[in-house]
Amino acid sequence: MTVVWVAGLTLFIIFAALFAGLWLDKILNSKPLFTIVLVLISIPVTLFLTVRIVRTTSARIQPAIKKEITEEEPHRGEDS
Image: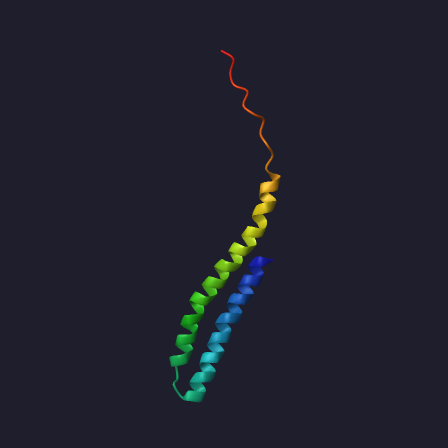
């Protein structure tokens, strides 16, 4: 589920930057400037959010994995 959420967030940020850039370029009559700048800015923002979401999700999973580890029998040593 997290993968779908991250993919949706990535697409939303990139398309929001694209349409905001196109809108600003249309209003300010600066054809590709704002579109290119906003799309380029959206890339590190998307990467940062992806890493943050993955780290948060994996931190939630880690305690469950630690609980599943069973204790090993103590080493009895060899009789010589």
